Image (cartoon, rainbow, N blue to C red; front, top):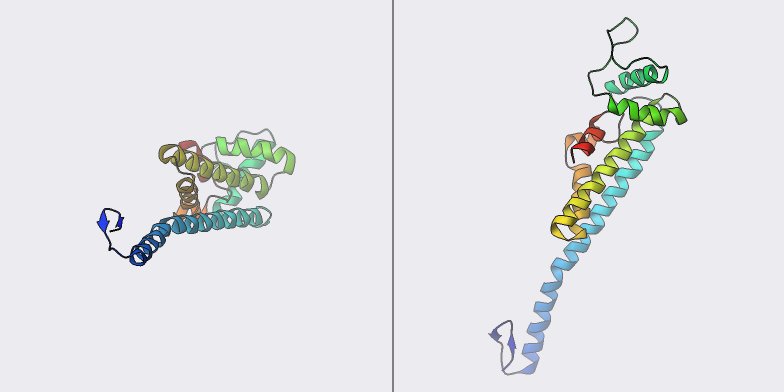
Length: 178
């Protein structure tokens, strides 16, 4: 008699071997699904980085708030305060100032345009993805789940599809919340 998984299979060796091979192929399904998830998550993250990189150099705003963000950046680079009473030529935005001051550091190298603002957003979103990866990996002790979680962070919400690589404060704020 052959025993596999606590069950008596049969006396014949061929039947036991065939049953063992079928159960072994079933046991590989989770491993193949894990690899499929890893490949899909990796492809999505690569696509996110490529799309964000292509958006970096696009000269025109994708969102109405990007133009206002460039105005705030110009004010900071000219030594003027980011906030103050509104004038006919400048109305300050109602977003926290840290994003604009971090972007001003990048703009000191690249100039006042959409590029430093989008660069800060893209780097912050990548840092947020790395934090999600690290948190999930630490809690589950599983790198594959960390990678899948980072990919879900990069693409599962409306904010991630429209704001994580644009000249908006959302990605830096989300990263600091993580």
